[in-house]
Image (cartoon, rainbow, N blue to C red; front, top):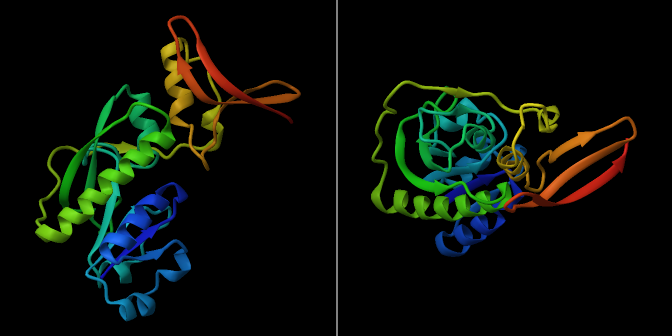
Length: 221
């Protein structure tokens, strides 16, 4: 038996697939991730496709915990990997499956798989869910073939909602398109501009030859 611990609703399809195919138990509430509860379930693995909370030491030291990170570790440890990758001009990345330890994205690597970064953030997360599903099945079939991370680590800073404001550094249509799409997912602070009276949020953008076509939501400040 395995546990899927996930805090991002966009991965509901992944949860359903793992429940139906692998008999997974699903945890969405951080308060359910307790030693007593996990011991009763006695999982072979706990997989964390997207978990916005610190995993307690008493959990990862007692159980085989696997977290998935959307960079080619050790490059890009830390927060907001998707947005930081797109801002740096990446069109592809690797999803890294690593063993949870006390560090931030520093654990040994089970495996990595390639992921394209085209489309909106929501579309990318959905593709990532399919990749993670395949990785989970491979880990279950092959066992924990762990390797240390290789190379010099770099750290990404977690972005704040205020950083979704379109700034002066966004000086081309291509940069603006990437900025809008990298924030275009439910639950994320969408790209915006504002004036004294209104806030303008941008989603569902498409890049044409000499223009961006996009949806705009206007709210009163």
